[in-house]
Image (tube, rainbow, N blue to C red; front, side, top):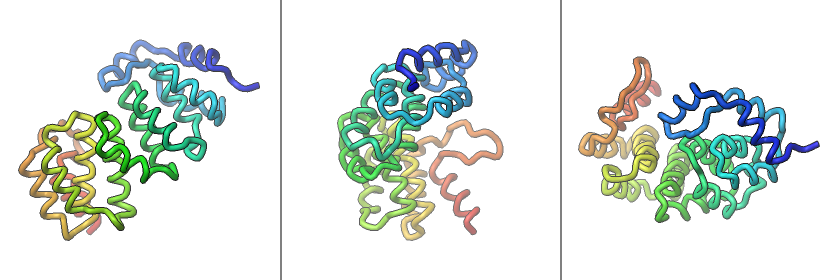
Length: 220
Protein backbone atom coordinates (compact mmCIF):
# COMPACT_ATOMS: atom_id res chain seq x y z
CA UNK A 1 0.00 0.00 0.00
CA UNK A 2 1.37 3.41 -0.94
CA UNK A 3 2.32 5.92 1.74
CA UNK A 4 -0.06 8.84 2.23
CA UNK A 5 1.01 12.44 2.79
CA UNK A 6 -0.19 12.28 6.41
CA UNK A 7 1.81 9.12 7.02
CA UNK A 8 4.96 10.55 5.45
CA UNK A 9 4.73 13.74 7.52
CA UNK A 10 4.11 11.67 10.66
CA UNK A 11 7.18 9.55 9.89
CA UNK A 12 9.24 12.72 9.49
CA UNK A 13 7.89 14.16 12.73
CA UNK A 14 8.93 10.96 14.53
CA UNK A 15 12.50 11.51 13.33
CA UNK A 16 12.63 15.07 14.69
CA UNK A 17 15.74 15.71 16.80
CA UNK A 18 16.10 19.10 18.55
CA UNK A 19 19.90 18.93 18.35
CA UNK A 20 19.78 18.26 14.62
CA UNK A 21 17.33 21.15 14.21
CA UNK A 22 19.69 23.54 15.99
CA UNK A 23 22.54 22.58 13.67
CA UNK A 24 20.38 22.67 10.53
CA UNK A 25 18.85 26.04 11.32
CA UNK A 26 22.31 27.58 11.44
CA UNK A 27 22.66 26.54 7.80
CA UNK A 28 19.28 27.80 6.61
CA UNK A 29 17.34 24.56 7.02
CA UNK A 30 14.44 24.69 9.47
CA UNK A 31 14.06 20.99 10.18
CA UNK A 32 15.38 18.48 12.70
CA UNK A 33 15.69 15.29 10.66
CA UNK A 34 19.02 13.54 10.26
CA UNK A 35 19.64 13.29 6.51
CA UNK A 36 20.79 9.67 6.68
CA UNK A 37 17.51 8.78 8.38
CA UNK A 38 15.59 10.83 5.83
CA UNK A 39 17.30 8.95 2.99
CA UNK A 40 16.47 5.64 4.67
CA UNK A 41 12.81 6.69 4.88
CA UNK A 42 12.85 7.59 1.18
CA UNK A 43 14.31 4.20 0.33
CA UNK A 44 11.61 2.47 2.36
CA UNK A 45 8.81 4.41 0.64
CA UNK A 46 10.27 4.09 -2.85
CA UNK A 47 9.77 6.35 -5.86
CA UNK A 48 6.36 8.00 -5.68
CA UNK A 49 5.92 11.05 -7.95
CA UNK A 50 2.45 11.90 -6.65
CA UNK A 51 3.52 11.80 -3.01
CA UNK A 52 6.61 13.80 -3.97
CA UNK A 53 4.38 16.59 -5.33
CA UNK A 54 2.18 16.54 -2.24
CA UNK A 55 5.19 16.73 0.06
CA UNK A 56 6.63 19.65 -1.86
CA UNK A 57 3.34 21.50 -1.85
CA UNK A 58 3.02 20.96 1.92
CA UNK A 59 5.75 23.55 2.53
CA UNK A 60 7.24 21.35 5.25
CA UNK A 61 11.03 21.67 5.01
CA UNK A 62 11.86 18.03 5.72
CA UNK A 63 8.87 17.06 3.58
CA UNK A 64 10.31 18.91 0.62
CA UNK A 65 13.64 17.12 1.04
CA UNK A 66 11.84 13.79 1.16
CA UNK A 67 9.78 14.78 -1.87
CA UNK A 68 12.90 15.42 -3.93
CA UNK A 69 14.18 11.94 -3.11
CA UNK A 70 10.86 10.36 -4.11
CA UNK A 71 10.59 12.25 -7.40
CA UNK A 72 11.98 11.27 -10.80
CA UNK A 73 13.42 13.87 -13.20
CA UNK A 74 11.62 12.39 -16.20
CA UNK A 75 8.31 12.72 -14.39
CA UNK A 76 8.60 16.50 -14.02
CA UNK A 77 8.11 19.01 -16.78
CA UNK A 78 9.67 22.46 -16.91
CA UNK A 79 6.68 24.09 -15.21
CA UNK A 80 6.78 21.53 -12.38
CA UNK A 81 10.44 22.34 -11.69
CA UNK A 82 9.79 26.07 -12.02
CA UNK A 83 7.01 25.85 -9.44
CA UNK A 84 9.21 23.80 -7.12
CA UNK A 85 12.17 26.17 -7.20
CA UNK A 86 9.86 29.03 -6.20
CA UNK A 87 8.28 27.03 -3.38
CA UNK A 88 11.56 25.80 -1.89
CA UNK A 89 11.76 26.43 1.84
CA UNK A 90 15.42 25.71 2.63
CA UNK A 91 18.98 25.94 1.35
CA UNK A 92 19.40 22.16 1.32
CA UNK A 93 16.17 21.64 -0.63
CA UNK A 94 17.34 24.22 -3.18
CA UNK A 95 20.66 22.39 -3.58
CA UNK A 96 18.99 18.98 -3.88
CA UNK A 97 16.33 20.23 -6.29
CA UNK A 98 18.98 21.54 -8.66
CA UNK A 99 21.40 18.61 -8.29
CA UNK A 100 18.96 15.69 -8.25
CA UNK A 101 16.17 16.93 -10.48
CA UNK A 102 16.90 20.06 -12.55
CA UNK A 103 20.38 19.03 -13.72
CA UNK A 104 19.10 15.58 -14.70
CA UNK A 105 16.01 16.88 -16.45
CA UNK A 106 15.60 16.97 -20.21
CA UNK A 107 14.36 20.53 -19.59
CA UNK A 108 17.62 21.70 -17.95
CA UNK A 109 18.66 24.08 -20.73
CA UNK A 110 15.16 25.50 -21.10
CA UNK A 111 15.10 26.19 -17.36
CA UNK A 112 18.62 27.64 -17.34
CA UNK A 113 17.60 30.21 -19.92
CA UNK A 114 14.23 30.85 -18.27
CA UNK A 115 15.75 31.42 -14.85
CA UNK A 116 18.91 33.34 -15.72
CA UNK A 117 17.11 36.70 -15.85
CA UNK A 118 14.29 35.86 -13.44
CA UNK A 119 13.18 38.32 -10.78
CA UNK A 120 13.54 35.59 -8.13
CA UNK A 121 17.17 35.32 -6.89
CA UNK A 122 16.64 31.66 -5.99
CA UNK A 123 15.64 30.92 -9.58
CA UNK A 124 18.71 32.83 -10.80
CA UNK A 125 20.87 30.83 -8.41
CA UNK A 126 19.50 27.62 -9.93
CA UNK A 127 20.27 29.00 -13.40
CA UNK A 128 23.88 29.69 -12.45
CA UNK A 129 24.24 26.15 -11.08
CA UNK A 130 22.93 24.79 -14.37
CA UNK A 131 25.32 27.12 -16.19
CA UNK A 132 28.26 25.75 -14.19
CA UNK A 133 27.32 22.24 -15.28
CA UNK A 134 27.36 23.34 -18.93
CA UNK A 135 30.64 25.21 -18.53
CA UNK A 136 32.27 22.04 -17.27
CA UNK A 137 30.64 19.41 -19.48
CA UNK A 138 28.92 20.96 -22.50
CA UNK A 139 30.23 24.47 -23.22
CA UNK A 140 29.48 24.45 -26.96
CA UNK A 141 27.34 27.47 -27.75
CA UNK A 142 27.89 29.26 -24.45
CA UNK A 143 29.13 32.86 -24.58
CA UNK A 144 31.79 32.43 -21.93
CA UNK A 145 33.13 35.98 -22.32
CA UNK A 146 29.59 37.27 -21.97
CA UNK A 147 29.12 35.23 -18.80
CA UNK A 148 32.32 36.71 -17.39
CA UNK A 149 31.09 40.20 -18.27
CA UNK A 150 27.89 39.59 -16.32
CA UNK A 151 29.68 37.99 -13.39
CA UNK A 152 32.05 40.94 -13.21
CA UNK A 153 29.08 43.34 -13.08
CA UNK A 154 26.81 41.44 -10.70
CA UNK A 155 28.79 39.06 -8.47
CA UNK A 156 29.70 41.44 -5.66
CA UNK A 157 26.14 42.65 -5.05
CA UNK A 158 24.29 39.39 -5.72
CA UNK A 159 22.14 37.80 -2.95
CA UNK A 160 24.00 35.11 -1.03
CA UNK A 161 22.67 31.97 -2.74
CA UNK A 162 22.92 33.49 -6.21
CA UNK A 163 26.38 34.84 -5.41
CA UNK A 164 27.59 31.40 -4.37
CA UNK A 165 26.31 29.81 -7.60
CA UNK A 166 27.62 32.63 -9.78
CA UNK A 167 31.01 32.36 -8.10
CA UNK A 168 31.00 28.64 -8.96
CA UNK A 169 30.50 29.52 -12.62
CA UNK A 170 33.41 31.97 -12.43
CA UNK A 171 35.65 29.28 -10.96
CA UNK A 172 34.51 26.64 -13.46
CA UNK A 173 35.32 28.93 -16.38
CA UNK A 174 38.81 29.41 -14.99
CA UNK A 175 39.28 25.72 -14.28
CA UNK A 176 37.95 24.27 -17.51
CA UNK A 177 38.84 26.96 -20.08
CA UNK A 178 42.55 27.86 -20.02
CA UNK A 179 42.18 30.70 -22.53
CA UNK A 180 39.94 32.54 -20.06
CA UNK A 181 41.74 31.49 -16.89
CA UNK A 182 43.70 34.70 -16.37
CA UNK A 183 40.58 36.80 -16.82
CA UNK A 184 38.56 34.67 -14.39
CA UNK A 185 41.32 34.91 -11.79
CA UNK A 186 41.60 38.68 -12.31
CA UNK A 187 37.85 39.12 -11.77
CA UNK A 188 38.02 37.10 -8.57
CA UNK A 189 41.02 39.02 -7.30
CA UNK A 190 39.39 42.38 -7.98
CA UNK A 191 36.01 41.55 -6.44
CA UNK A 192 37.35 39.53 -3.46
CA UNK A 193 34.05 37.66 -3.12
CA UNK A 194 34.40 34.82 -0.56
CA UNK A 195 38.08 35.69 -0.03
CA UNK A 196 37.58 35.50 3.73
CA UNK A 197 35.28 32.48 3.72
CA UNK A 198 36.26 30.18 6.63
CA UNK A 199 37.73 27.07 5.05
CA UNK A 200 38.74 24.02 7.14
CA UNK A 201 42.25 22.59 6.73
CA UNK A 202 42.66 20.32 3.69
CA UNK A 203 39.55 21.81 2.04
CA UNK A 204 39.53 23.99 -1.06
CA UNK A 205 38.57 27.62 -0.57
CA UNK A 206 35.53 28.85 -2.52
CA UNK A 207 37.47 32.06 -3.30
CA UNK A 208 37.63 31.72 -7.09
CA UNK A 209 41.36 32.44 -7.63
CA UNK A 210 42.32 29.93 -4.93
CA UNK A 211 39.77 27.39 -6.17
CA UNK A 212 41.00 27.70 -9.76
CA UNK A 213 44.66 27.40 -8.76
CA UNK A 214 44.05 24.30 -6.65
CA UNK A 215 41.99 22.46 -9.25
CA UNK A 216 44.46 23.29 -12.03
CA UNK A 217 47.27 22.05 -9.82
CA UNK A 218 45.44 18.76 -9.34
CA UNK A 219 44.89 18.43 -13.09
CA UNK A 220 48.57 18.85 -13.73
